[in-house]
Length: 114
Image (cartoon, rainbow, N blue to C red):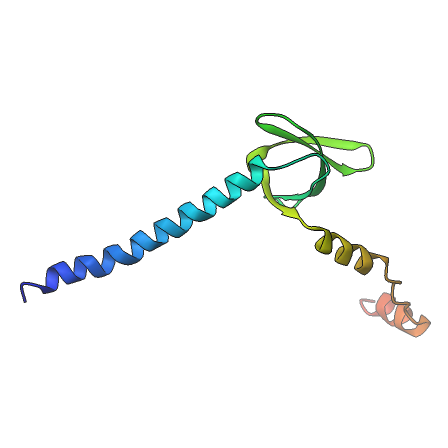
């Protein structure tokens, strides 16, 4: 019975210790990614905005989010750098021809609420 309390404390502290280590490792990984940003990188912000890095300062990053539209963000707002395969895959998905809707489907959709 005397060894039950120390085992209980140990059982609670060990998972907490490993959780903190994992969280610290992830934070270091994100910080190193944010420090290694360079002009031309395609990134995603923490709010889900896609952009291309056009200028970098000590604490801010200028992102081009559309042609000739540049916004300024904190470096900490950059969640991930997109690799070329992601960019190519999204581009090919976007260029696929849209599915044409038949006339009767359009009429059904337009008159469904009426």
